Image 1 (cartoon, rainbow, N blue to C red):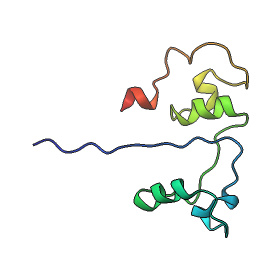
Image 2 (cartoon, rainbow, N blue to C red):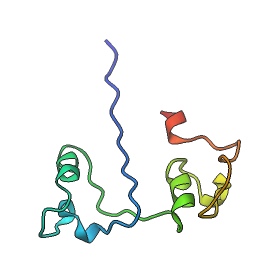
Image 3 (cartoon, rainbow, N blue to C red):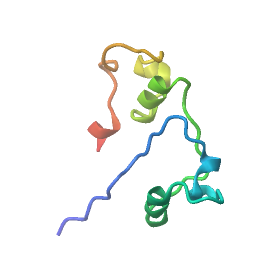
Length: 92
């Protein structure tokens, strides 16, 4: 019997402050569905955006590369990632 592969869910949300999420201790229930997912999975306590603005940050998060390595360095980037870039989806 083969081992069951884990499910991977990555939330990438622009302009959401962690200190306003109930899963991180905010007093109001603001993120009940994300709280439930976090309770059954992994909740990272220390996380940082790899770049500002959003577009290169997502390219970096989904490749594990520095933003300059992905060839995506601007908010309004046009075109694909560099041909040398392998994404998380391709790796999985």
